[in-house]
Image (spheres, rainbow, N blue to C red):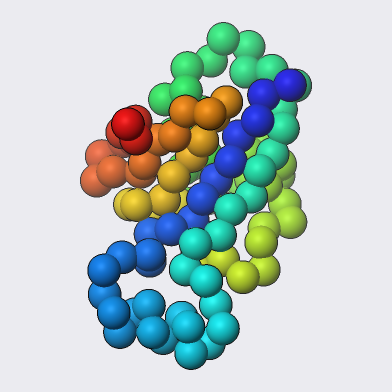
Length: 103
């Protein structure tokens, strides 16, 4: 089994007003959902990240189905710049173009 975690954190930034708005609403700007897949069949982590991005932006697809039910308290649904994907302990951040490994 392979473990994949999607962390919605695009709105967790240094904007004090935005963070206060979340606090006032009793919401956390960072939410995660972990799924397990049988195996990744040798598929690259980059490809998995891109598939997760595609599925969460289209609201359909195999990874979308695996992520259901989504956390109720998430700040957004579609993956955005700043969100992260962790695959077997390696974390990748959604960038302006593609994903970058978090060192």
